[in-house]
Length: 337
Image (cartoon, rainbow, N blue to C red; front, side, top):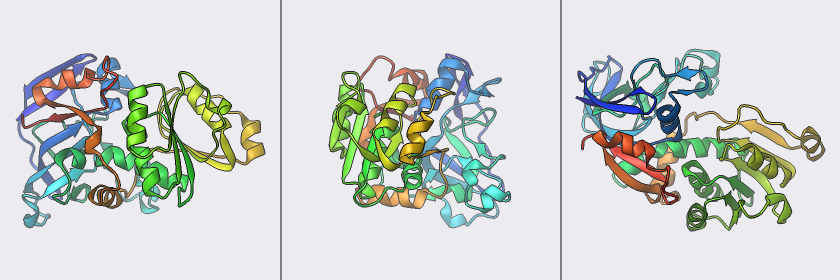
């Protein structure tokens, strides 16, 4: 089968490998769509993310969907031919964190496209059958793949406690931020304020349900009278995070979704005086059923995010598509092409 591998920073090669064989509890998936994530582009540009270093050729891609082609001995054979969205991280399911519902924090997590684990930019992949989620025909292949970033936003919204009547501020309108806008509205938020420095993405945020869209290249949130109960910080930018914390209402909750600077000087007096709650978020746990329902019912539109498609041999172009195009949002690679 054909596989796209990151040979080293900035170099992607198309090679041939043997088609994998599913273990007894796994399924073999013919991959039809893979979304390009910011982590993929970071590995491509730098060859590492924090302490995860690409030391040997790595297959990128963790936002994936496909069709089950073969099943292991312990898997129901009727699953062959089933369209699935892949949850790309398989935990141990035995440790204290897994058993308490926090399997996203499992120390033994095996996660696609996280060195040394290969990802989904291949014609075929294997995954534990429990993490190959069946999807209805109403979901496109692209949407099925993008259930993964939807799960990131969904997990953040759940941790934020968004409910009917909430006023939500979403900082950063990249793919996760744009999905977070839609998710907040689906959870019942009446006011959703989106901020970014990209005018096109702010326009998309309005189309996707934002009641206000603020260009923070021209104004500071804390100076325009914005107030929110919940902050979903999706930019990863320290200045944006600090400015957004200042406009949280008393007893507000901030969820840090975007990754950026390793260190951030938090205004502790502000946090204490307003009794703000500040929490991180890492991946997701148990989100796929709700994510599928949100898309199937039309509450969230993932197809609107896709701005370009690429064949597997064009993976390098897909990984650089957003560098110079301010209108680029989400690229999808089709490994069968």
